[in-house]
Image 1: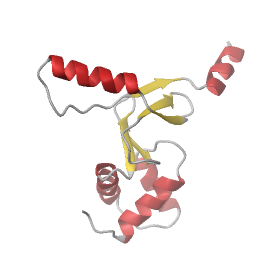
Image 2: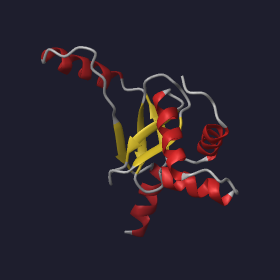
Image 3: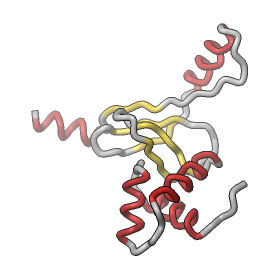
Length: 133
C-alpha cells in the first residue's frame, strides 16, 4: 500500500471535487490554479495509484486519453458516459458479467477481467441536439 503524501491527498481532493471524468493535465491545471506546486508527473503517479487501489475510476476516452474520477464504490461496476457533457452514471450489468465469464470459459480462460464503458448522449444533450437540428 502506498503511503499518503500531501501530493496524493491533494490529487484525491481535487479529483473528488471534479465533475465527471478529468484528465491528468486537467487536474494538474486545476491544482495549479489553486496555488499548488505539485508537478504533472506526480499527478500522473497519484492518479495511477488511486485507480489501482480502487479509489478512482479510470477509462480511456474515445480519443484514447486516460480519464479519471473519484470512485463512489470499490465494487466492480460499469459506466454510461455522455460524449457531450461528460455526465457519468455508474451501472451494474449482470448480463455483461455473465457473458464475459461464459466467453472466457468457452475459450479456456480463467480469472478473466473486463472493463465496459458505454458512451452515448444523456437525455439532456440528446434533447438539445434534437431541438437544434
